[in-house]
Image (cartoon, rainbow over all chains, first blue to last red; front, side):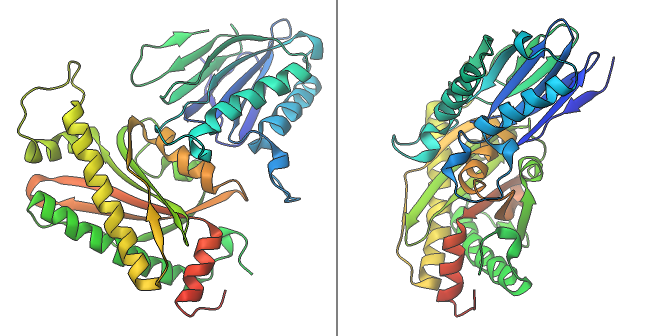
Length: 162
Length: 207
């Protein structure tokens, strides 16, 4: 049993098998597991916001935004030996933690994160094999590079495997 | 010019600490009235941390936590969260609500949830009122929202809102404790950088 590779907020990590990633307590953030099944190479990204273009600041943290983080992770996975065309994705998170009024940023950020993640994956032609997104609860995500299984744990529901 | 939270000077941090002290002091008085017992508050901590530290600040990312969120806007923008663990939430409710019926799975009943929401509302309002009085700023607060979930997932809400620029967030944190019933809870306040500037200016500090 290998040690868990912990992925923080606005962070991604990549590795070869055998390794298991974990990212804790996704709320409105989204966790993206990318995997090349044959090479057994994969990565987990924990994004916080949908698009880097929201901010005109030059020094953005590319790992924070769905559009930049996923692109960078893919490039790094290829460097590590993944076949770009064989990458698949599983995603989780993007909840709305509080039932706030419509129209506020807080109320819709989870949904917008999910949309941006899906758009980015679509543009990169990476198929989404499974998702556990939306609703109103926090999720911890484990991603096992041996099996490619994404395991989602929450306080209110039983553990689910994708 | 203040653009990031980690550019705050020691003096500005002292001022924030004092604001937290006054805000939470007011909130503690309100809580003491509700519970009808003495409530102690810790020294305020002004935390300027990266996102992961903020998520773990309140006893572990996955700890089941009851959170009440109040947004404020107007001339100042920010959020206040009142956080307590499940056992403390139940203990407070047993003081306040005469109701035997537990939720079907050991969770809190609707009545108890709305009572906690109301406590969060009162504490948030007291906190904001004192900032408003101190600075003369007109501040409106939202209705309270409640969620029971992983502490990290709850904290991610203000972190996303106030961490969009830069890689740090700033929050002022205090712990309330009511010894007689062995309760503890936290109140935390996040604000926008712009709001910090305005508050500093109102208090006569250079920004």
